[in-house]
Amino acid sequence: MTILEFKYLTRKDLFDKKYVAWSRIYEYPYVLNVLTQLGANENSTIHNTSWGYEGCHVTFKNDLDDIYIKTLHSDIKKSSLKNTTVYDITKQPETNLVEQFDFVLNVSTVEEVNYSHVSIIQNLLKQVKVGGYLIITFDYNDKNTTGIGSIQLKEVEKCFNIKLEDNSNKISGVNSEIIEVRNKLLNCGVLIIQK
Image 1 (cartoon, rainbow, N blue to C red):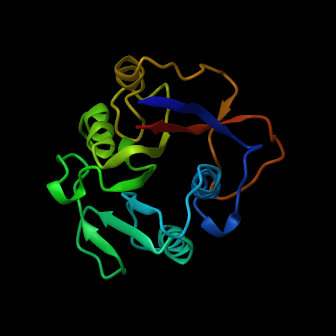
Image 2 (image 1 turned 120 degrees about the vertical axis):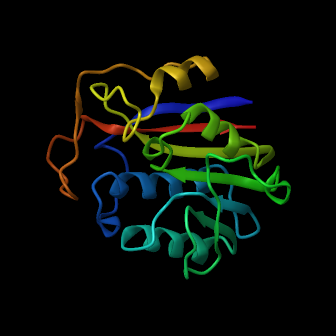
């Protein structure tokens, strides 16, 4: 297992306003770009474990489906969205999901769950084929110690022996607004692991 990236996203990163929600305008384009950089193609198997039934979340799911025909989406509850099944990221994956995917994605969902974030990441990693990738994005607020709405950073850092750069230049997003300060860090980051 190799950590390829563990960093904050910045306002200099690629963005697309079609994804509406403030952090998603950065996270979704970032993930799509990383997939391309890592060599994903129409035959790549992808499990998108990101939650969402409406708006920008459906747009992202549709974008994945248009590019990668072997994409499975999962969510916490049953949905009428195509290629979508139920999977609870706090649970061990069923046998049919273990080491089945070239890429497993989780966009800003881990931190929303009242459960060990390390365990969730490990559950997602189990689904990645050897040589494949886990790509997660997350929100982080150093003033939030509960871990709900903010990744349990200390536990993740300790488990994977990594350190997210501490930088006081972080700023919160303002509902889909791109402000002029393009070198500031967002309160969200990315972790990319190759298995």
